[in-house]
Length: 298
Image (tube, rainbow, N blue to C red):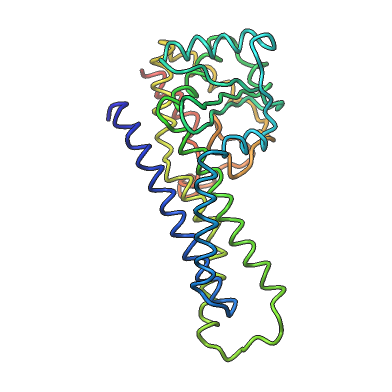
């Protein structure tokens, strides 16, 4: 698959994810409404409106929310000339507009890109990665992130970061609402009782569904960004060395959340190891060792 097919695929996936999200929220609203003894269609309509606005809002504002969540601070060339010049030179080499550059005050070595398209892109690096990597290694990481920008991965990742959180919150809201339900509920309403069970199942499964939405983007995009980033720098070893240093650092990224974990260059929750092959299917990133091996074979 060439780069143009990847870009087209990511644009299509963006629309698909937003449509599926709206349908899921609408269905959940109907079930939660029936479970609460109300009119399912009314609840579904309200949920649909919220889902629609949330989807559109996430497209335009998710990058701002991600930056606010991570505490990233925008810098100019005078603030850190080396980082700014690396981003600027690689953006020119990639044929991209100059993205905004942010630094996150976090001791863990990591980075991410966000934004809805290359004209509104952001590249952020942590203070930890600036302290640990040399110039060629940092170039490899930033080239990786700019590849996400060029491949339109940032649009997918930014939208998913918001949608995942929204789905989880909806399920949590329903579960909490059960504690405040009145005691005069008709316990003989078998239909409502059935929907109550279905609603509880929906709420319990919401975190898993949210995780699957993250995984719908596929861990393969990380391999693609590694490869295209190495083509940009013409030095795969720089990125491989960066990954080795990050793998050796046990510090988790404190500015990351479960909803934004997939945005980062490497898995930010380093203290959470997969205990089995099945558990590894739910990781947001491929193993660092596998990424390093592929880079060294390029």
